[in-house]
Amino acid sequence: MRSTFSSRTKKFVGASALAILAGIGGGSAFVAATGTSSAQTAKLLPAAQITAPAVTNAPNFADLVEAVKPAVVSIIVEGGEKADTRDLKRGGKQFNFNFPDLPDGSPFKDFMDQFGQQFGQGGPGNDNAPQAPRKFMAAGSGFIISADGYIVTNNHVVENADKVTVVFDNGDEVSGKVVGTDVKTDLAVVKIDDGKDLPFVKLSETEARVGEWVVAVGNPFGLGGTVTAGIVSARGRDIAGSAYGDFLQIDAAVNSGNSGGPDFNMNGEVVGVNTAIFSPNGGNVGIAFAIPASVVKQVSQQLIDSGSVTRGFLGVGIQDVSTDIAESVGLKSAHGALVTEPTKDSPADKAGIKSGDVITKVDGKEINNALDLSRTIASKNPGTKVELTVWRDGKEVPFTVELGKLDETPKVAEEKPAPADEPAAPAATSVGVTLVPNADGPGLLIQDIDPNSPAAEKGFAVGDTILQVNNQDVKTVDEFEKAIQSVKDAGRNTALVKAQRDGNSRFIGLPLSAN
Image (cartoon, rainbow, N blue to C red; front, side, top):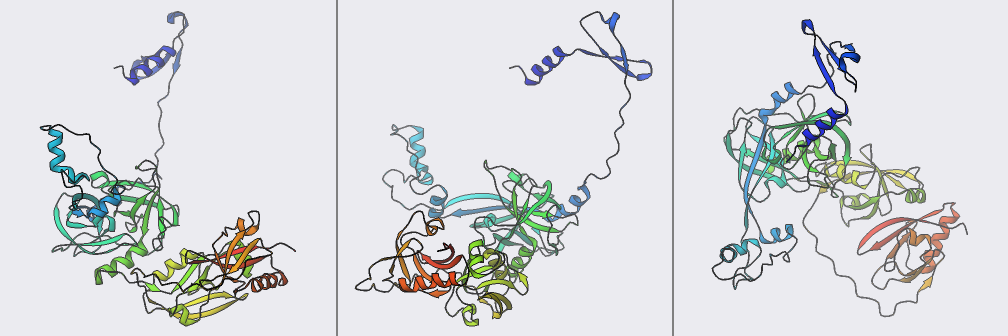
């Protein structure tokens, strides 16, 4: 097959014929040839030797990489996945290989009879037999943080591991043991058996700044010791709804196998741990996410000390403050975390935090949104006393709260109260919703809604329960209308409405007409 290069070269030469003439003393000149005789028309064009200026400010990471690479390792994992985990990853138990009937003696039939169960087929006469755990091998990255052999990596790298092998940059292999894992931050700590005088790196004490250089070292696609470079593209990224990650975004090339590997600053300190990439095709597109060093330091130390992580617990349901909500409560800008409901007998409840409060600061630090509050509280230890600044009734109110311990076990759903015998008749309101007292509990149920009303535009729907208006409980349509009117009388154009859907409470800023 003809090479692309040859074809393109031929086209280039055919378009412009050039000859290079060697001159005396090693000089050279270009001769431009035309359609007439070269002897008659050729002109010698003097050519000066090109001297490129020395590039003195180009980044060079060679010394840094040479210093830190001995502390970066590859993590090889062997283990088994449960049948239900495998079903989930493969799209459910409906994922089957639909082979046609195969003749006796066919090698494919023998193969399916012997190994069909491993591929979701129960084998002959065994369609409903339980599936044994599937053995797997996986590879990731990690880095040593102490001379006695503690290694940081990702939880998803060592998840379900039965055997962990640590491979050093020089090719040496040693066995490791998982000390502890934390699913919420996707971090894990592995300990090398009999580790002593090992090279290790330090976690950065300062936050990485957007625009700073970072060097990623890891084991992408099993290619251990791979080095790539880029910058910190952004901070505070929220991926997959994580309440604790506060991820760095970097544009260094990060691929499968880089998980758990470090990102270094120009001082050779770890500023982040690679954990995920955004990719439409499975490969690197310059958007990678790393767990910041501050989170890594806190979590890894707890895993080393106790094998698990404990987090501070405030005990409030929260949501972001929208522009409408900020206007309805008198805040100058949309910031803070709006309390939808304090958990009964929680630290917040005992301290006096109420539904409708907006938490704007923790220990003097501004709170931007609900996720920011979750991260801030989760970063503190149980028993810590925190100073909250709360926006209530148009002014700031201080509260001191002693944090509890977050219980991350699943909660059992509470039984709903029995419905009332005779529900009241529905009634239309001035804001385009038809309400009826909630027979199953507090508040008013939306039975109908005008599709052209502001309520419909803000997402209210039939079946929602309205619990409060302007931080006042409403149990009747008359109470609802009075609360709406009180907002108008106060000169505000937006009412703060607390609504509930599927057991989850949320505040919504409802614009009001001038009438």
